[in-house]
Image 1 (spheres, rainbow, N blue to C red):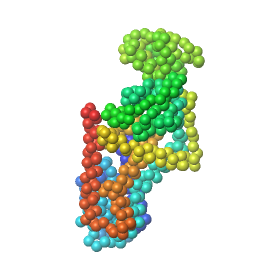
Image 2 (cartoon, one colour):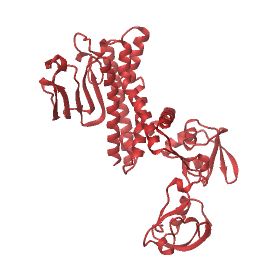
Image 3 (cartoon, rainbow, N blue to C red):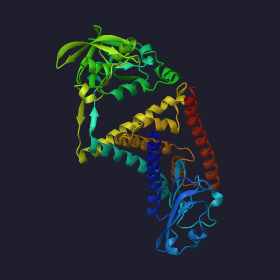
Image 4 (tube, rainbow, N blue to C red):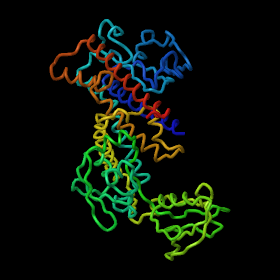
Length: 466
C-alpha cells in the first residue's frame, strides 16, 4: 500500500508542478506543446488534444498522428496543448515552445524565433514561467497543511509532558543518556518540543545537554561526533516516548483474560520488580517466556496483583493502549477554524522547510551520502495501511522537498534556468542556445548520477550491505 500511496502522491506533485509552468506560460501567451505526467519513452498510456471543436484521444500510442501537429491545425487550434500520461513514474514535463530543456536542444528549435515562443519573451516573463512549478509546489504544501489543521486540528505533546521520559538509541546511550531521561536544555537553551530537540541534537553539534534524571537535572557533555556516529550506525530515530503499559483490550481466551486482567489496567510491576514503561515490561516478559509471573497493576487507582501465564513468545494476550491522548495528561489537541488554519499551515510549512534545508548539512558530514535514499526510501515513509492524514502530511512534505530541490541552481533543474535568466537580467547578456544545451546535458548527467546513487543506496540496504 505504501508504494501505491507514493505513486499517487508523486502524481499529484508532478501534475501541480508542471501545471505551474503551464499556467504562467499561458498567461504570457507562450505556446505549450505538450503537458505530461510521467515520462513516455516509446509510448504513452493516454494522449488527448482538443481541435476542430472537440477532444481527440489516443490510448497506448507510440506516434502522434500528423493530423494532431499544430502546423496542420486551424490557426485557432494551434495554441492547444497535447495532454499526456506516460508510464515511467520518474517525473513529468511541460514542453514549452522555444525553450531548451530535457525534451529538446537548440537544434530542435524553430529556425526563426516566433512571437509565441519562450525564447522571444522578456526575461521577467521567462523568469515567472520557469519559477511557476516551484511556486505552485510551495503554495500547495502550505495549503495542504492549512487544510489538515482545519480538518484534523493539531496534536501536541510537549517534550517535558512525557513523564516517563524517553528510550534512547544506542548512539545516545554512548553519549551518556539513560533511558528515562527527559531533555530540558541544549547548550543552555530550554527545549520544549520533541522536533526542536532532535533537530538541535543532529544539526547544531551541541556541547552540552541538560536532562532531568529522576528528580535531578544532570548536564551531559557531548562528544562532538553525534552526527557522524548516527550516519555510521544508520540510526533512524534518536529517541522515542516511554509510554505506560495500559491494557486496551484483553484478548478473549488469552492468558491475561483468563487471569482477570481488564481494559484500563495499568501494569507497573512483574514479580515485585517495579517497571515504569511498556518497553521495560515487554522486555521483562520476554525473559519469562513459558513461565507464570505476578503482575502488579493499578485498577481505578487501586494497586492489585494477579498471576498470569506468559506464552513461549513472551506474550500474555493483551493489546496495549497506544492513544497518546489517553496515556499522557500533558497531551493537548488544538482545533482550528478555517481562517486560523491557513496562517497556522503557513507557519508550519515554513518551519518544516527550514528544518529540511538545515538537515541537508548531514549529507556533507562523514558518511553523509549513505543517508541518501531513492524511491524505496520515500515509499517507506508512508504507512503500510492507507491513512489519509499521513498521506496528506507526507505529500505536503514532498511538495516542499520538490520545491526546494528544483530551486537549486543546477542546469537541468528549474533553478538552473532561473540562474541563467537572472544573469541575463543583471548583465543584459543572454546565454547562447549552444551554451544552454551543453549546460542542460551536464546538469542531466549530474541528476542521473545522483538518482543512481540514491537508489543504489536503497538496493544496498535491501541486500543488507548498509
